[in-house]
Image 1 (cartoon, rainbow, N blue to C red):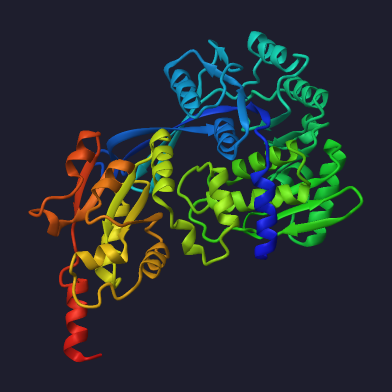
Image 2 (image 1 turned 180 degrees about the vertical axis):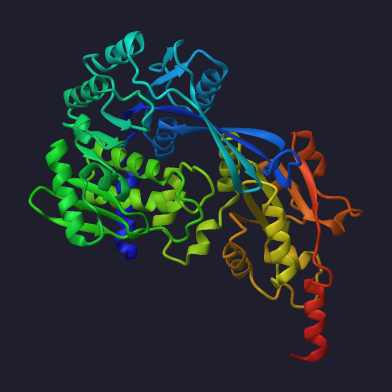
Length: 492
């Protein structure tokens, strides 16, 4: 996509108002149990999981609401939680994310849906689900219907997030559609299951390829298959325009008159597709609720999803992240380069989501194998790695040697950002990273083991704030000093 087109989309996104959107669907608490799994049990041929800590994140419709909130919409959630500790924890996470929970329904007869993932470093070894899939009924359904039947309806549009846990009954769906229509808004659904007749009357739905195949009975292999599936989706649900997400192949849409297009994916790097569908449906709903054309809404959704899949785990990209992406036509690695203000915001978001940020720093003038090994090991201690890089002036003040740095700051940051182990790169101009560390307050501060007797800058601050300092083993004989010495000795 051209820079001019990106700027046009950026202008559209910048001008979007804080539209009120109600997310109706299955509220899920995601628990991550982090630890190690390096032994086999003597009792049975299974791994022994050595538990270290818990993390709790918003899942299901809650993550959809988080995406809306980060994009600038005013998001509320309508769903059901149990009268239990997970339900109370989920309510607090929602409140911390500035998502309105006034419409949340507590049902004493069913548990809060929660998924526990046991993760050894970044590898998921087991998932345990605790939930009820029975349709919500009785008093809980009545309370949901009462909220949807308010007139005037307090929200502009409705997003239905169906994870198949029983909240989106046929009566709830139809009440939500009527509510949005009463405001002249849109109803968008992220569907589940095979029976799409329950969604009859919605404005848009966003099945992926496999979901569309299951709902229509059409095996999607060729472009002709896409047209057949789109026609069948229109027949089943009465939608005017069918949308099918195709993963790495982009997003397909077709209108009632047969006009169609595939919008190519905007992902520059794919590490984890978790939550990408939530990002697509959230941006699509927000834009359509604000009056943006369908094609432009899908293009913006594609850009937002491109950010999500470049992160590990679910990620709710902010409006500023999408704007930054649209304003940058440089190589993909520059997406990771952030200012100190952006770094502080990212660190705060990760803390709120229960994620561990690993921080390290250095000049990284001549990148070598030792650096790569060190950064990979440092990254394994958390969910994301942020590298602070000395500016050229800072390097010069350290008297590293004549002509240092050999590579300018922009080049050093670009090379670091191109590494898969590195999630964010931030420059700093001070002689030490002390101010940056105190501004960011990472959960993990990593330095090479050669700093054991030198005193790690920032140690006291990080430990006083509940974090840890790790000394990472280094590859013997690999250093920038040795590389420079060899070049000077050989003249090569």
